[in-house]
Image (cartoon, rainbow, N blue to C red; front, side, top):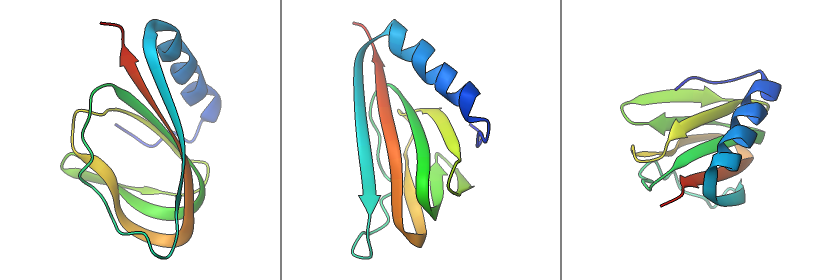
Length: 102
């Protein structure tokens, strides 16, 4: 996984994946001052994350990534993942989970 700062390519990946999927879950997530780090999410599917506001360190497996507004990442959601360090709040991001058809 790598940080993608070329949003047209990231959106192209998202659209292409959504066409092939049977299940798409979009979330608009806001982490306020009361939010706690939560780097232990794990579920089926692929996930697309686009940071709109704030700054955070995002964990994916055994690696971490510094995310800033405009950064996008796409990854296999079966690995442990999630916000590990909440640096500049509020943090707002779009998260879209894509699951393949059964």
